[in-house]
Image (cartoon, rainbow, N blue to C red; front, side):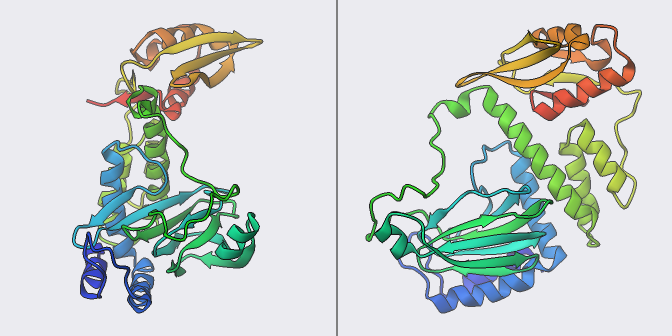
Length: 344
């Protein structure tokens, strides 16, 4: 089964065409849910979706909330992955049109609220609680307030198929409910700030690591090639992790190859400073300087150097540091998203 097979389901069922202001019948959504439930437990389908997601990660597109890796042109339906760290939740929020959600790996706990009563009382009124394990597929049809959360100690992955009308303001709109969470407002110029590239680098690293873990356990033809794609997108530390768990050998970074780091964006402004017995590296963001790492003051020469140099060889970090200490600093700088490894 492939993503195209599910797209054909939506094309065959009487879902509104893109631009049509109608909503589908509930029976159509339920029929689609049944097919998605079959697909989400099929590793070939999931690997196909991951292939699209890796293209999205490689594109360096900003990520806020659920970012679609694919949109069905004829229907406008959006397909997106949700990454859930331990304890992760978007908070209670509202959907104004139908959505389908499937748990791909691990599990989620979903709390729903009585929408009408919540607005009437001006506070969230719990209604139901669901425990969704891997493979569980559900849907929202009528406007709904809910709160998914990963209550486990491991990452979860979910698949979302979203109506093009979700998020539209309803005719029955009530005054804003104080307890609802909304997407954070972002200054218009924030995506243009150099630090936005650091945020995207971190998000890409998170996605690559979680998808690589899933792919390494898959026994489908696409998995090895997709795992190599993850390897190529990853930092030095992530590459080492992938090489260890890959079912077939992947050529990791050679100890003899130059370890050159360059700033994620050429206009990033970095500063080093002392804080007691530590040296800190700060980066200028759209809201001011933010600390990115703190390390023993014995590395002050190296961090001073890093703050000034836009590109350098990790072996050339100054100070009385061992080879292992230089490697730790190099990997840490990649983990922050401030620097990436130059591979030629």
